[in-house]
Image 1 (cartoon, one colour):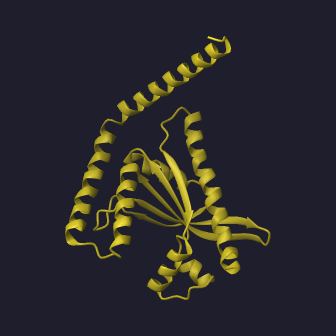
Image 2 (cartoon, rainbow, N blue to C red; image 1 turned 45 degrees about the vertical axis):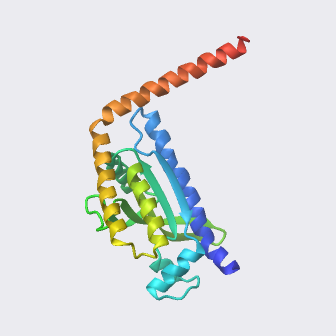
Image 3 (cartoon, rainbow, N blue to C red; image 1 turned 120 degrees about the vertical axis):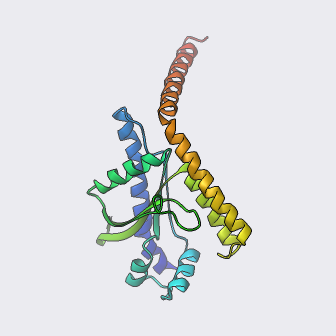
Length: 222
């Protein structure tokens, strides 16, 4: 187990660092007074049970190794959620312009959805982490999607787990229709994005004013 902990530690470090960096994008856009394409960021290191399942699928030894690191580029995973479909392109461009990581593969499942209906934009990156033994470059996967896409993907993942990848036809067809409905929702929200953006700014300004008035009244003992 110690060997696995040592092997996975750089991945945990990478996830922690990337989450902080990508969350910082929100602050940068906010300071610029621009629409924030990043809604929120999550990350995880693949559990050992999932790694084991992948080694069986790929027919490689279940042990920490350079082969395992190469064959499983998603041991470290980051997910960036956006409000609108158009925001995904902005985030992709922002990541492409970064110098602290190197993109080695891109998969656009939004323009080219999977047969199941799955939509998301995937990147495989090389990211350097600093360890007591020097710099170590690891592979990580970044998934960029809307909130609607993420909701659908989470449900689909759970159902696939329950049925061990063999979904009944009825459920599979319902999922496909749900995927299209989710994408239509994204498209409709994009059509009124300016109204949504203005409403969010109005609400934020109102909340700040209300909080400020409340604080002032509290200090006055009212």
